[in-house]
Length: 115
Image 1: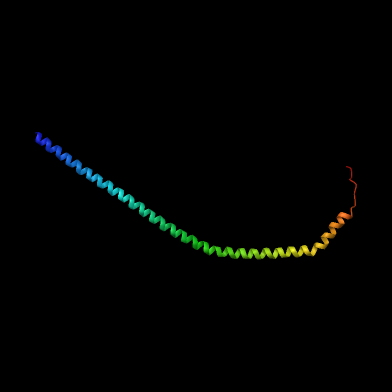
Image 2: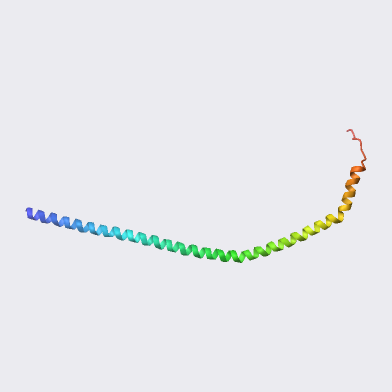
C-alpha cells in the first residue's frame, strides 16, 4: 500500500511540476504578447501622428498663402485710407486753425437764463 501511495504522490508531484511549467510558459507568452502589443501600438501611434502632421502642414501651406494675400490687400487698403485721411487733414488744416483762433479770440458771452 505504501508503494502505491508513494507512486501516487510521485505522480501528483510530477503533474504539479508539469502544471507549473505550463503556467510559467503561459506567463512568459502573455508578457511577450503584451510587449509586442505595446510596440505595435507605439508604431501605429507614430504612423498616425506623422500622417496628421503631414496633413496639417499641407493644410497650413495651402491656407497661409491665402492669409498672406489677405494681409497684403489689407495693408494696401490701410495705406490708401491713411493717404485719404492725411489729404483731408492737409486740405482742411487752414480752416480748422481759423475756426479755433476765432473761437478763442472772438468770445461772445451770453448770460445764463433763469428758469
